[in-house]
Image (cartoon, rainbow, N blue to C red; front, top):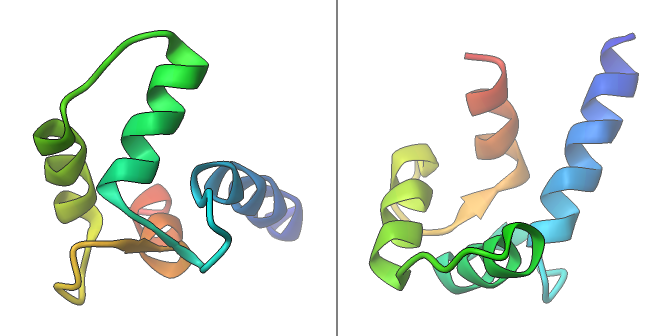
Length: 72
């Protein structure tokens, strides 16, 4: 069951990782939110969200950081 949930989480993460480099930037997050929700958020708002999940200080979100936040 956990594998199914992790696989689903990976699909969500991959949707935000527009360039496929394994990291989600604030700009990628902002663009996908605009596309999926039809709402605009600022780059600063997107960066605040990324920073809240970023544990290594690179200002980008890895799948591991995303997964840890989902399991907190």
